Amino acid sequence: MIPPIANRFVAGESPAEALDHVRRLNDRGVGGIVNLLGEHYDERGAAAADAAEYRRLVDDIAGSRLGACISVKPSQLGLEIDESVFRRELAEIVAAATERGVFVWIDMEDHTTTDATLDAFEAVARERGGGERSSSEPQSDGGVGVCLQANLRRTRADVRRLADVPGKIRLVKGAYDPPSDVAYTDSTRVDQEYRTLLEYAFEHYDGGIAVGSHDPAMIEHATALHDRYGTDFEIQMLMGVREAAQYELAEEYDVYQYVPYGDRWLSYFYRRVAERRENLRFALRAVLSS
Image 1 (tube, rainbow, N blue to C red):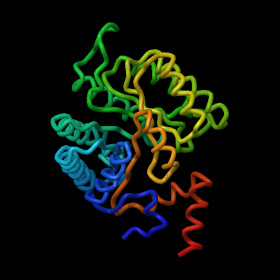
Image 2 (tube, rainbow, N blue to C red):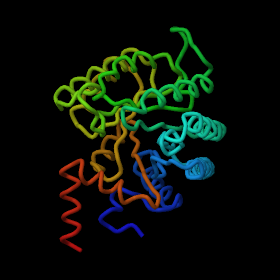
Image 3 (cartoon, rainbow, N blue to C red):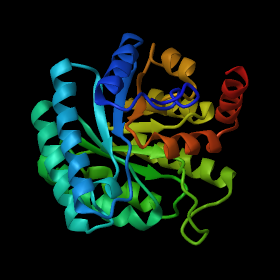
Image 4 (cartoon, rainbow, N blue to C red):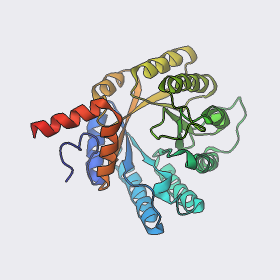
């Protein structure tokens, strides 16, 4: 069982617990992005097992009619085994999800995986979304989206590259620590890039923009861009982080919460606690009150 100190950030160990959490979110007007915890597999069997669970999860979401989608990690689906393994597992998950009307997000991992992740996203999105489109045609979401990290120097070019791809993008600041030759390391510069990337996306995309941020300033910037350009967007935040704000924002905007589950929760919990002072304070209070 997941101890109370960790279950703020992880919905449980089973799919049923995760979907129960999503059901409660839906009652508050928030959607769920369900993620089975697991990454960096070097054995084909582990990747295949998680891919099979994702396909079952798609069936469970569709059958329950919950406001939910799924999010997968490339290294979870075999990218570190071989790129072809990742592509094959991803394609099968997206095919199953498209058939059941469930959206699939592809998480972004460290900078060494960016090319393989974006190539796979573009291939499956064009296949599902009808290939190339003219500038006058509306953009389909293709049933799939991908995460882009504002701290990477390459991301401006990637956002331009993906503008005509029939899929969604999720913009985040970036949780990894890449070297300075490929990334901006100053937080002020990262904030500047995030704002620039958001403006380009709101101006040039027909929709399909996810603002993956807990930063009130960035969310305010996104809502102002929405008012200026009229572009559809959604706000995405993590389970256990600024949840009151999530419910408040959901009264006016589309809001989704990233909902992880599974028995590999310990390392995920430690990452959440380490990355924000607010989360660390919560964990300390939980320890002292137990």
